[in-house]
Each structure stands twice: as C-alpha cells, then as structure tokens.
Image 1 (cartoon, rainbow, N blue to C red):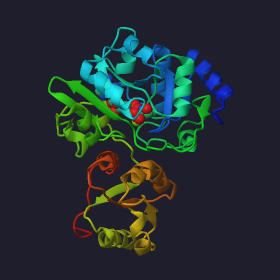
Image 2 (cartoon, rainbow, N blue to C red; image 1 turned 30 degrees about the horizontal axis):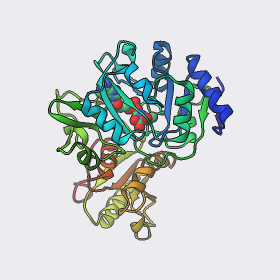
Image 3 (tube, helix red, strand yellow; image 1 turned 180 degrees about the vertical axis):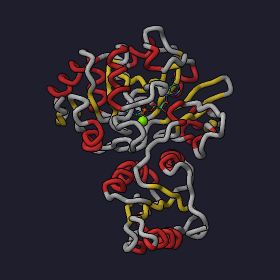
Length: 347
Ligand code: TXA
Ligand code: MG
C-alpha cells in the first residue's frame, strides 16, 4: 500500500473522512500527538489499528469525537465526568465513562468503561466533524516507540501500512492527553498529560490522585489501572538513564565521559541553558528548564533523534514532577524504565 502525506485542505479532509467511513485508517494531527484513526464503531477497522501498530489486544483505545451530540451515543458520563469535559474540551483530557452497547469490545479491550476525548486541533476537529463518527485513535507510532509529534514520525513508523497521513505540522502539546477515571473516591489520573493535576484540582475543588505507577515501575502483581502503563513505552533503542539533581551538568559530563571511555556511543539530553557547558558531550536540546511546556513539546522528537544518531546510551536531565513536568517525567521515566544513574559512574 502507498502511504500519502498531504496538506489538510478541505478536499483532503473530505477524502480522509470518506476513507474512515469505508473502514480504512487515516493518521491525523491532534494538539497532543498524531493519532491513527479508524471508525470506532466498526470492529474490523479497530482490528486494523491494532495490526498496523503491532499493539497488544489488551490495551484499549480512546474514542475521539468532534461534536457533543456523539457523546451520549458512546457512553454515560457521570455529572463529575461531564464537569471535566465542559471545563477542558476540546482539549488534552481523556475521560473514562461507562460504555454504551454500540461500542465494540475491541475498543475497550473488554473493559466496562470507554475512554473519550474531544481534541483541540483544527484539523482533528474538522475531520471528526466531517466524518461524524467516534474515531478510535491511539498514537500513530509502532507500539512501544516514542509517540509521533510530526507527520514524518508517522511515516517513519507506518509507511506502507496506512493510505493517508494528514500533515498538520508539529503537535503543540507534544505529550499525550491526561487520562482520568472518575470514581466514588474522586478523580484519579491514570496517565498524566497535557491537562495538569493542578488544573484538574481547580475544577473539581478537591485533591486529585495520581496512579502510583506514574513515576515508578509497577510492583510485582500490581494491576495497571490503565493497561497502557504496563507495557514498555516511549522507548528509543538506546538505553536511557536519568540523571537527577538541580545542577546536573557535572553529573551528565561524568557519566558521558565514563561511557565513551568504555567505547560506548553516548550522548546527553540536557536543558538549553546547559548546552554551552555540554557542547563536547554530544548534547540533545530538551528546551529550557524554566519552560516545561517546551520540554514536553520536544521530548518525543528528541528520543527519536537519539535513535537516528545510533547511540548506545543517553543520559538525561530531569524536571521536577509538577505541572506539565509530571507528564514529562512519566514519559521519560518509562523510556528509561525508571533507571537512574548511580552517584558516581561505574558504581
Ligand atoms: O493524546 C492522546 O491521548 C493521543 C491522541 C491521538 O489523542 N492518543 C493516545 O492513545 O495517546 P493511546 O492509545 O496511545 O493511549 C491511550 C491510553 C493507554 O494508556 C490506554 O491503556 C488508556 O489510554 N486507555 C484507553 N482506554 C482505556 C480504558 N477503557 N480503561 C483504562 N485505560 C484506558
Ligand atoms: Mg500510545
């Protein structure tokens, strides 16, 4: 199959909507990452998504809608869930709600709740409104690879697997949506993302919990609240190691030098402020440490660049896990399988 990358003109969006109606897959930009869309009410289209990504069948998909009228056709949101949707949609928030019978079990991997979101991107909204169906869309990467934040990332992963990629330029948020469940005990973040815990707390006016495994590996026997959190994720081929501390320059340099001294191809992922001091350590620019939004926007592209550079190991600076930093550290932590460097190289 040929894969076309096109500018999302009205005509191309209409073509994309027709492909979706016919059960084909289309990759499209959202404000978070590119999605791999298929008709969310058509089990065969949903199966194609799992196949194209090589995604484990036990990892459920998000249904995307572009108009409020479709909401009640796919789920029954509680008043609290509806409050969050009203506050943050269209936007990078995904809410779990009891699913309607119309939603195929393949979408939810057999779970009783379906994940729903209305993205805030002009191309995504135009496509969703044109097709007027709930569109199942995971991130448009091969399962386990960093999520795609440009159309070229999608092409790199899915060339020959899908007919069409709508190229809407780089995604502005850069990390995926926040996934929340609304339980009797309150709102719980299953996956931190573009809408921060602090933003949610302002709306619900109560503490919002974060699933324990957001910043550490799952314990033996611990069930993942969000099935996606149990799979290795966001991982480049290089080993990623987190270097903690407020002033990581010295540590990044030490670890880099120790790695090259034993013949490894190495690099560092550092903040823009530290680039001059680390210019001889094969640095990759994460953005300013004072602007977590930029770090989020760049993170997945940087992880892909690390792969293209053919590195064996990369040492990364970290952000405090607050605001958007929580989503950044969740993704970076999973890319690193939560491995931190020792105080001194070699220990
Ligand atoms: O920003 C985003 O959310 C992007 C764009 C394309 O919208 N989509 C995305 O989808 O990141 P995906 O499939 O890569 O990640 C969806 C996450 C997974 O961790 C999955 O396990 C979880 O949401 N999820 C989906 N449905 C669920 C459900 N019914 N119960 C619990 N977790 C669910
Ligand atoms: Mg994904």
